[in-house]
Image (spheres, rainbow, N blue to C red):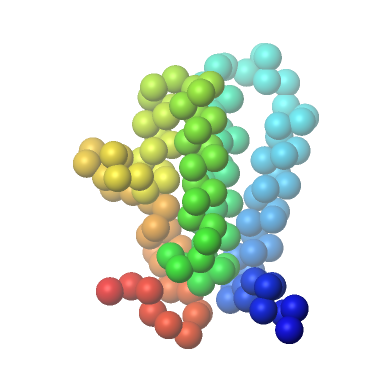
Amino acid sequence: MLTVLLPPAPSSLAALAAAVALLAAIAAAGILLPWERLPASAQAAPAVAFLGVVVLLRHAAGGSTSGFSVLALLPIFWLALYGTRPELLVGLSGSGSPSARRSSSSALPTIPSRIGGAPSSGSSSAR
């Protein structure tokens, strides 16, 4: 009865492992790199790299039907608060936000299908 509360198993363990590895690399970079000696624009790199974690988690959990897409807002909020306008625009264009779609193509929804095909879930989310 309690298993109903648990999320479904990931459809791609390789994507899940890659997301965990990328997240660990971002955390290690945040702790170990001398940020005060790097250019200010380098401080946006962890936020933009986190979008890659979101892409991998979405792919591992079944694509656009997974609940991980909302995590793409975290680096956008961080860039809006602490980044510059060009850094925010880079984050928006990578996140697939509607405001960025007017100016450039959004990468978040399409990267996994470009790399490794559609997620191996039972239902098709592409129309």
